Length: 82
Image (cartoon, rainbow, N blue to C red; front, side, top):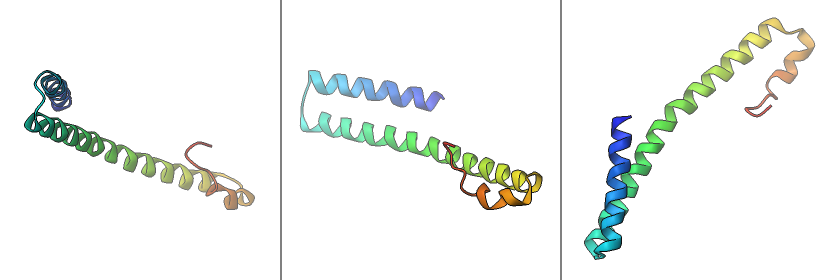
């Protein structure tokens, strides 16, 4: 959480500096700050997606164990939104 806040404040400061004192160097700093912030955001979302997949698999296995036999063909048609 702290690193997210630091990167967000850094991005705001760099964008403000670039608007006030535009140069190639400040533009480059802005691009690099955006890239680091974007990479950090993607890095945080990957474990959440893996966790969601594991939970869905667990739900399917539990449903297969508890549901009647005629439902088993339909279990894997369930998606994230259904």
